Structure formats: structure tokens, C-alpha cells
Amino acid sequence: MLARLLWPLSLLYGALAAVRRALYRRGILQSERVGVPVIVVGNVIAGGSGKTPVVMAVVRHLQARGMKVGVVSRGYGRATDDCRAVQDDSDPREVGDEPALIRRSTAVPVFVARRRAEAARALLALHPDTQLIVSDDGLQHLALARDLEICVFDDRGTGNGWLLPAGPLREHWPRRCDLVIHTGARPAFAGFTARRALADHALRLDGTPVPLASLAARALVAVAAIAKPEAFFQMLHERALVPQQCIALPDHHDFSDWTPPPGSAYTLICTEKDAVKLWRRAPDALALPLVFEPEPAFFEALDAKLSSLDGHQAA
Image (cartoon, rainbow, N blue to C red):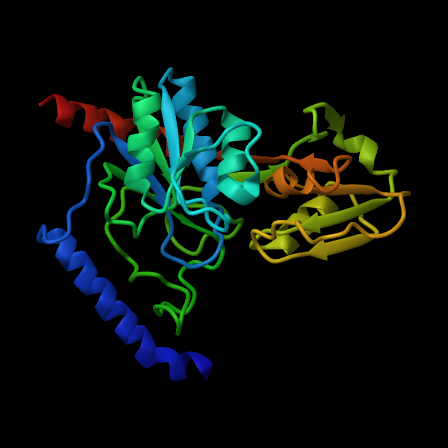
């Protein structure tokens, strides 16, 4: 019922988005090319759909191919508004939790800015040997020209198929896109799939691994400040980890005013995304890495797209 009441607003939203796209298509608004190929990993559905694991998987794949890769992001949820590099010791509150995780997990140059083209220019100025840039989110950020688009979906698919605010879509689907990947277990339509599971170890603040099997006998408290905390809690149960308490917080929560439950006879566990912030409040917490493995056909298709792109540019 609420969706039907909001439907007129979704028509206005769609009309404004269509006008904006037309302005870029006709050159009235300009998309900026930054001098190297750009891959945008984004979504058309609002909320977290698993973009960051896809970004990291793509970056690692390109690194394995010997390519020098950089990442740009807006740094959603950060307290700052400037363009800056993400360092190993950057405060996630200043650069965003996802850029901090990408930097920590891949060690590639990562820059954040409101305008991703500005972040790309700054990245290339300090790292001129960068061969390709991956944009974390930004499918609708048309000011940055892109060469490949990867659209990410979870098990929601396209929801009710309506645009915001009557539905979950930022833009109409289907739309032109180079690759589609599903991060959930039940894809709603055709596209590449991926395996998601917890790693066989947790990580301490200093990077020391802790075998996951050794946690089964401990008293555990799980905390998650991600788009779908229940998915993390479910994965714990699938690995025979049954926390005494599961604490769900809003996505991108910065933990600055959060206090761990009283007592010391438990081990605090969380996602890697949360750990980059939580370790400042609870340095003994353990981060449980996510193993995200796209099917081989996804990388084969990505490589084919990149090869075609190279040939087009050479021509």
C-alpha cells in the first residue's frame, strides 16, 4: 500500500534521472576521462548488495595478471568531505569503512572524494604507473567516464521493480551493462554467481590468524554493522559458531559511541568491514574475513572484455 502511495514520487525521481542522463548523453554535462581504463562496480538497487567484495575480487584478479590497479570511492559515511589518499592507518571515520577495508585487504592505492574523477586524478598524480582504476560504486555517477560496468545484485533482485521511493531501484532495470554478478545464494535472474563463506580463520588486530575451529568452544559475542547483519550471523551458525549474543547495528556505524557488553569472559567477533573501526574501541576483537569467489566464468568474461577494450584503444 505504501509503495502505491509513493509511486507518483517514483515517477518524478525517474523523470529527473532521465533528464540528467540525457544531458550527459548530449554532451551538455561532461563525463571526464582520466587517461586509464575505468571499471565501475555498482548497483541499481539501493542498499548494500555486496559491491565491496566484488571490488576486492576484481582487484585481486587484476593484480594476479600483473596489472597495477588503483581504487576510487566516495567514502560513504565518512566525516570528511575532501579528496584524500587512504593509508594503512587511516581513520575509517575520515575515509569510510569500505575504502579502509579495500586498502587493508589489497594494498593498492585507494583515494576518496565526492567526485570520483577528482579522486582518480589525485591517484594518478601520485601513482602514474597505475594501469587501471576500479570505482567502488558510482554506477549512477556519470561525471566519471567508464569503460566497463559491473552491476551487482543480491537475493532481492529488483524488488518490486519500482524506482525510489516506491521501490528499491535507483534506475530502471534492465539497463545496458557489461557484466552482472549475483552475490546471494538465490539469483533472481541470469548473471554470474559467486561463493560466499567465512574463511577458516579469524584475524587479530596485528594480522595474526586464529583458526575458526578454535572459537567453537569460546563464549562469543557477535556484532555487525553491515547492510544485512543477519547474513553474517547465519554464516556463523553455518560454521558451528553460536554466539551468546548477536548485536546488529546500522550499516556504516562508526562505533565511536558504542560500548562493548559488560564483562570480559567472552570473545568479540565481527566482520572485516566492522573491524577496521571496532578495533579502535575493542582491540581484542577478532575479524572474520569473508571468502568471496566469483565463478571462473566471471573472470573469463572480464578478461575478454578487457582484451576487447585494449584492442579498441589500440585501434
